[in-house]
Length: 445
Image 1: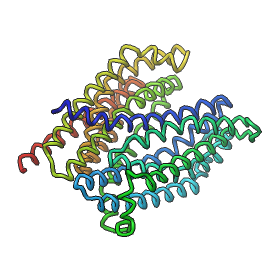
Image 2: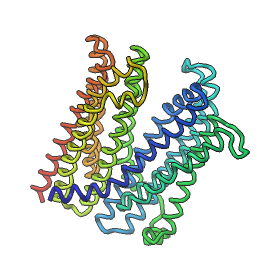
Image 3: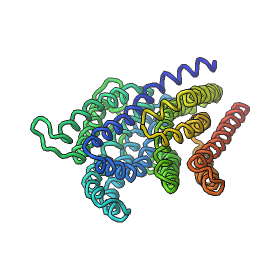
Image 4: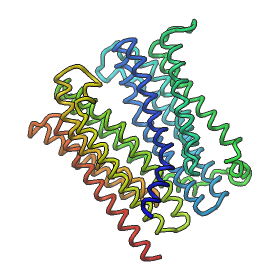
């Protein structure tokens, strides 16, 4: 039964994973094209992305509540409730998107107070304006995506995310470099490319939701179900706020760790960037699988089928261990080749290959903790994982990493040992929590 459930969860998760990887590739394309213009423009784009990313990730965390509640309602075979959760969830995400966008727009003068190169800041300000506006279509697209994901129609958003890659690259080619008679806007051109692409995929997905036969029955219920209800918003916030905090704390912890490692020297920071880029890429697979398993457990919860929840969860945790093990083996075997793909600097390659060796251990605990958090979110247990993840990153991981890095003089490797310690802590406790809850509820049933 576990093998069968693992296969079903994988089939659901694969389109989500490809969608996540497409979003990451979009950023890599932007960086590569801007980098060919000049390193200061590339530095400006990195500065803006790091600032915008934290509130954007918080917003994405809130959109997760849409898929969870839609999947729960679908498990109850209640089309009216599905339609109701979709409308309220979309409105909640729209309001949050506007708040985040405006906060970033009014806060862009912060760039002048970060002690950055003046020319970098000059490039960054107009780019941040465009990226701030693009938060709105980005989060609206994610809200619609979570709706389709919650119905287990995950291929639709994946296809759009992949189709966005050549569209974004083409708009960048026109506006960054001024081809076909278009103005040469350089970094600002990349900002317009991001904004236009995000608007396009949101509008296309919105049109599909409104017009496609797969969603017809939910849209037809709009006259009686599309009304804002305080109780429904409260339910969405109950799932969304902890999910947003979990994602936000993780992004913030890695941002702080990069700043700490940068205090050592430039070689350490460059090596860390290589290792974390590789780890982030493989983590997208674990994240997609966590989301898929979360949707399936939420659907089973709607039917109060704890036997199915247990089977889905156990198969997901085993799959996470296997994926983490595969990634760990790949990092150990190809650590030098991976490092050389990023740089020719021997000192950076030597340190990056050491960090990739540590990242191998990191892969296993990171995969399991992501899936554990997703499974608990699927059964509406969100407070405990939020607490455990905050302890793992901010009380165990970062402080222990700092002590090992500076007190014991392990340098950048010390911070990675801190990551491993913190993530192992959260992977253990989240897995135990899920297994204990499913065992208890099965006994009650």
